[in-house]
Length: 394
Image (cartoon, rainbow, N blue to C red):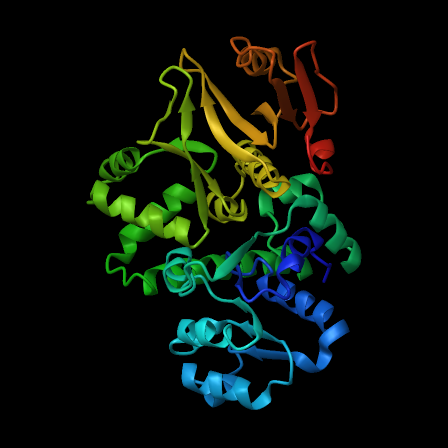
């Protein structure tokens, strides 16, 4: 497995801190791999002072079923000086948060990962307030995919990425059937284990309907009202309140992210609606099937890549209601970014470039497409997707 330096460099400064280091993110995004890579680095200097426990292992969990047993185990096995404790899938034991809060006070540096079904933002904010730092891990971006597939002796085209996304494990399978089976099972695990079981959702059919609609609506503006209207049109009973709850569950499991459109006319966020992006575009593809939703998936991977690069993102609406896909900022730099599959045809060219016309030129305007031809103008910078995916920043 490749070394995920993008994340490691953010965590290294906390290796000796008494803050609890939480590695979080959607299932199968590589949290355990990063935990092991951190542990390998620390072992180079402090091998004897490292304790690793994987609570998915039945033998470990049976011997250490609760906080009291974990505290006793660490006290019995720790060495003089600071000890580095690595707990994988810590949520499997009872009162795990109590154990972590206790152990951090005894000259220990704690690193934990956990399934999003039990280790979610709201919980550790409450349990560890002021005592933790968290690092969110995401599926591979394209640069990581190229590095990993090279390691595997394989290749991955841009189109393959646009359809099937970046969950690391999927690149290990040798054929399409195995890949599809893995991604479908992963999707079911997230929906059923992380959400239906966790929140004790009784109307599972309605939840599945809402989930399918949302995950196939990536890169689109949605609202609880629009989802409710869709369900009513399908003769499915629901309520806006229920849909709001379901959307929050999908966000808490990191299956989706929502960003608010910013209106230049009112100078406010349009809080009643938001643009939704999937954590991985495979969520759309396993639902839509062929022909795949390449246009919206393309915008979605651009969003995921920009987040990885460290940009803050909003959707921008000009004074006349026109929409720019992204208004992004990083440090003191800002950009307007428009995404289109192609502008080779005149109608598409005019539509995409006209979106920038009413914006002042003090902020750089960028158009990203699959086209290899450079369509840059005096006011708009055109970047091909294959070049964009290799960039570290704009």
